[in-house]
Every structure is written in structure tokens, then in C-alpha cells.
Image 1: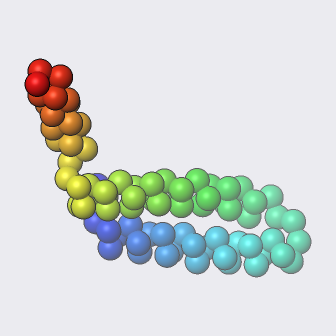
Image 2 (image 1 turned 30 degrees about the horizontal axis):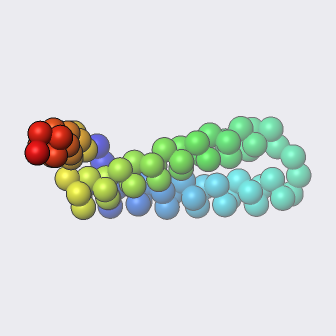
Amino acid sequence: MNTLAQIKAEIERATERRTELWHVLSQGHDSDAVAEVKELEQRLQRLWDEERMLRAQLRFGDRDEIIKRARHEERLARAA
């Protein structure tokens, strides 16, 4: 897993490249540029998802541990 700084840097590079490609596409249709924009959009979505997951993990802890605690608390509540 990447660090937040690495993810942000990757998002910045991908965003800059996407901007360049949109400029190329404003000049006229280029099927290679269209394909690359689509690829970059998917990559940016994955990076944003990864950043959100990492932020949540840093803030709240490991997802599996949270689920484990919640199930334990639920069992205690039902037993009470």
C-alpha cells in the first residue's frame, strides 16, 4: 500500500496528464488520446478510492479490527 503522499503525487501526475490530453482532444479527435483519457479516468478513480481507504484506516484503525470489535459488542448486547 502506498503512503498518502505517494498517492497524492500520483493523482497530481495523472491529473496533469489528463489535462494535457484534453487539450490535445480540443484540437481534434485522436483515438489514442481518447483511450489514454479513459485509462487515466479509471486509474484516478482507483487512486481516489485507495486514498479514502487509507485515510479511513489512519483515522479509525484497521477495517478487520473494527468489524471484529463491532461483532463482539453486538454479541455482548444480545447477551445482556
